[in-house]
Length: 165
Image (cartoon, rainbow, N blue to C red; front, top):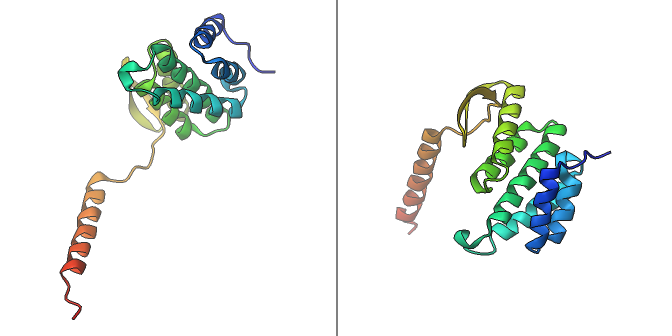
């Protein structure tokens, strides 16, 4: 059985309904706490669309908060499915693009996943640097990427300068 939504979340979802987010609110309620991954993905997509439907400063804060809530639910699904890197990515987007209403929960979830995976030090959140761990994500070395791009550019320049006649 899905977890019962906390009164704070139910109250917030009523605000979203009042802003025309009836479909989002229904999906978010089903998705809350990682209970329904398909509903979580759909709620995330709806909130994402609302964030991009107008210039950023014209997006109502309730939709930024809705995006943050959808990130929490989707990250919870990823965590339950043992996909911590995906969970961290979604939570990171929630911190970057979400509103202030669920900021504490986003930071707490980031810290919790980071602590559970325990491979890298120093997770930066909106509340400062956490001296906990989070998964080591294999990112390309920026210097290697730069050298690779320079090499590709040189190869293209060599092709463009080559005489074929």
